[in-house]
Length: 244
Image (cartoon, rainbow, N blue to C red; front, side, top):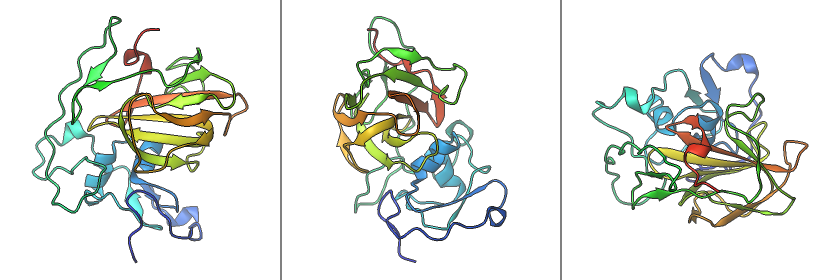
């Protein structure tokens, strides 16, 4: 079977396999999935999924492929591994070299934006929308993994930090039209329920670039749902965003 494009599965969607045919602890890849979106779905680090499933640094996956979820060990559990997976989402023709271990992020303060280790300098965060926070991290409900930010349909959604778009679609149940951005070896961010997506997978974006327009796809209220993941786990965005 020929491989799909760098991140997404552009081949026609195969017939969805019966639930009983997918073993416990595995996920069967569907058309439109990326390794990043699967990792997001299960609160896993994409590098951990790659290691557990012998997926190389291209991160290509195939329709019908079984991806082990339970065997995925978090990065902190495999620091001594001899062959770490290259975390760069950009595919080149040169031989991939293992990245340097990520530098621990300093504790955020109220005086300045959060800065974390990045490949080409410090990672600086900004607010992804102009509205007010209407639901905070950890609140009860399905959106507790991030912030819900108010807005009007069509208002801009901004990239909260520089990075590469690794998912742009509506295949994750409950997120509507979703963008996921990979910022460095440690952090990813997500922007959900958009009315319109303005970027595609593999696009490079800078902090503050307009990437979508606010809407209510997947929900009844017009808003932006924003998340930050550190090594696959949800963290409170307020700890990283600058004070208003």
